[in-house]
Length: 312
Image (cartoon, rainbow, N blue to C red; front, side, top):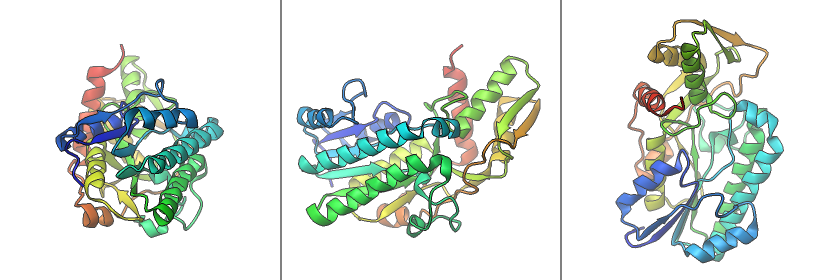
């Protein structure tokens, strides 16, 4: 599908993923990229979603808005996380259908996968078990979006596709010790320890879980490719192919920042899912996607961005 002169609506367009995504979409020469803020339209309320489509008349929609957080946030606000994501996803798909958009890209999450699945995760493993408990409300809300897209495809010929990005990281992420994802939280903790001359940093779990991380610019490019090229009812994994343990990650982050103190593992806290590694061959086959940023390069860029933009 060509997007020159088209109107593209991007929910979450001012967020961590949405900002580089909108920059990426500029290369398609659309007539307009519409990226409303949450204070303009509350996507959990049907009247406001209806108004959004009436006001914007999009030709295509990328639904990247989500209520997200780290393990502690997931444990503390499971009901809010499920409700807000389920409502946003349901309403965005339904009103995209009612307004006859020409393409809809739903952005899912690795959290939708079962807690324990064969490594690497393949799309056919998605329904083999229940998600890791702390991620389950978020992950299940994303799986319901997949079901809705597939159901609307079958009944209404809805032109929707569904992506499953692995853990994202990069410039523009949230950096704090409550709602951050693992990389940004770790950067924040180590840098704070250096600034305060602390000799110990405590991290959750035992460091044994592994994760695959995808640089946010690569994720944005994958979504742009999906908008242009992808046409399937099947979910599509988006990953980098690199797996790293949380312990190794802590060593890299502390080394890049110059932290020389002790790292303490609090094993009373949950590890989260034991392993995460994707088979992203379907994305390569169907739309030619392959990650370009190595993990160490992306990590250095993320740290450099944080050091330049951190609040004093």
